[in-house]
Image (tube, rainbow, N blue to C red; front, side, top):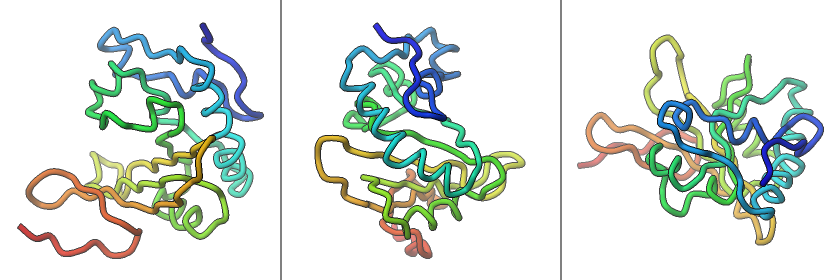
Length: 170
């Protein structure tokens, strides 16, 4: 149906559908419904373009739209906003994602959920790994500020806020 279109001045659909996991596993990851494109376009216009303008730096989408097969392959929750084209995980080269999260949380940008991945660093990449931002086009945005944390034992969990992490309890 739609393969690559300009969503906003600095974002193209292809940035949101590109996936190394999909490529490796032979998963087709394309939007199939016009509402998914409309949702991605609104995410770009309402949140990502203003954030890019604030920092005057490009944003790199690390995970955007996900087909159901890709979402399962990535271990995404069945109700993921990525499936609807309402969410993107991102980084901004040269900007710590924790700092980006604090600025976004203090802004008046209309995000639905922001999730800071604050799990342990991977390899030589210190600190948080990515920032998840979602925006709902047809319903009110909640402005939820969340943090993904990996305790010393057990599965990763979501915690409200960006402040110090709550003590791990068995």
